[in-house]
Image (cartoon, rainbow, N blue to C red):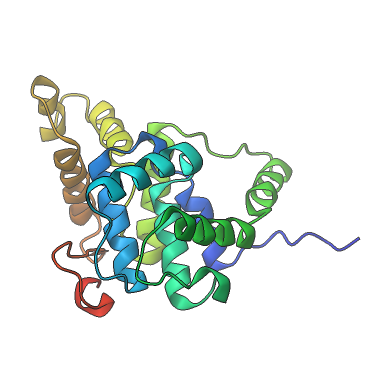
Length: 221
């Protein structure tokens, strides 16, 4: 029997870290819309889904792929753009359809099949449990990504991280004051990013432009 490798590649580490992000089933329509736009830019699809087409795809994502995270979905299309998911997943005919999405995510899941099992096994051997999906775990995983990659990801479980910082602030910071007012998801994300840029001033912020995509290089840096 072949020995199961207990070390992980950079892509596998990103996959494991990404598992601590926000699940697609818990994302708002706007969050999924941004994810779709990002995926279209990476793959060269000229326009993201709109109207009824977008509504159907969002419902399809929540129903069949709600268990993966925004970070993992983004990684799937980043690897596709690099040519790391095979040729079968690449053909889109300038149309972001449920069938095309399924092909990409199926290839992605196959590529990382068994990775989480190896990770849990390694944690068990080391006497530590795998991280739970708690606000603190989301925060620690995010910090790990920023420290390793020197970049702040565009997609993450911002709401959970925000509430962890809210609890940890113990009433002494600006974040705590937000308890008295209604704060939108985008504001929570910006609060966390502001905190991270102060904590890691050399880290770059992953960005992309949603306006009239033309070429990936013009909208992603």
